[in-house]
Length: 381
Image 1 (cartoon, rainbow, N blue to C red):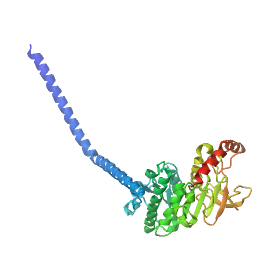
Image 2 (image 1 turned 90 degrees about the vertical axis):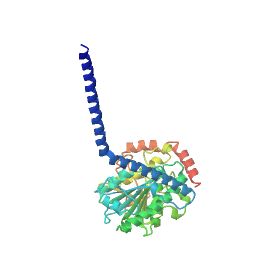
Image 3 (image 1 turned 120 degrees about the vertical axis):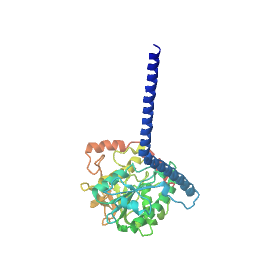
Image 4 (image 1 turned 30 degrees about the vertical axis):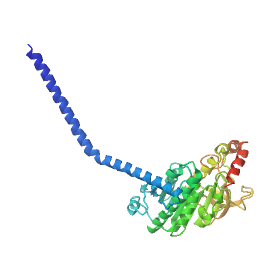
């Protein structure tokens, strides 16, 4: 009688061992197969993390060298990508690497546009949208220069110092593209705020000569009003320099300094922008929205030529003299007035009611005093 329970217990334990053993063995086999399958992926991940760590260390060394006024390489801190219609998502680009350039399906016969962001920005602010609009508009090469690892610093004077070094690096890329067959006149630099001045310096630093065109989107004012010409955007930096002014006197340049200067809605305050709160930031970023909207075959920003900037309004300006934005060309130069709507699409006229509501937001009683305080502070630079 005792033999039956013993046999049952023994059998149960034995079978359980076999099942567990088989299960464990299966798991080991599965794990081994899984290991083999994803081994390369893990290696690539670790290599990528190691490379990222290495770049971070080199970037940190770059910042130290800049402060020590020592010759330094900005490449570890800058992420450059090339996008084309065939590779719209873009490919990472290393200076001098022809294989990476070919992988992006770069075509030296097409126009090449280099986009530069400004202070405390990255590629997500407006650059991706600009790239997509350009590729939709025409078959071209679009280069995005993301230097956010340096620009996302609250100390503006230091970021300005970094910007000059990055601009020199971009100048080397211009040389590289020319060596690969792109004519200088086919190179167009687009920069917002601090990026506008970087575009000018980059063109100056190219050993091949100045580029065909530079578009400055509300070029930064703080510090740059006191800088020498070689440290800021000037009309001598390209064969055609066009500038869109949207927050002059706040954070943007208030006076004309380009071949074609477009003062939008007077160039100081944009309708619907609560500048008494944003201190110019809303209008400052509006320049990128106007430019992006202009990259279209169905959109036209009519510009009216003016005699001076002291009376930049439709009353003292006459006739349509040019088109603002991407379609602008060097055959029309001077000072221009452009009127926009309150909200997208900005190129369409706003209703009287919309303008009245916009004036309530824009011309708040606090705007005047705060504007004077703000401009007084920055007039010292």
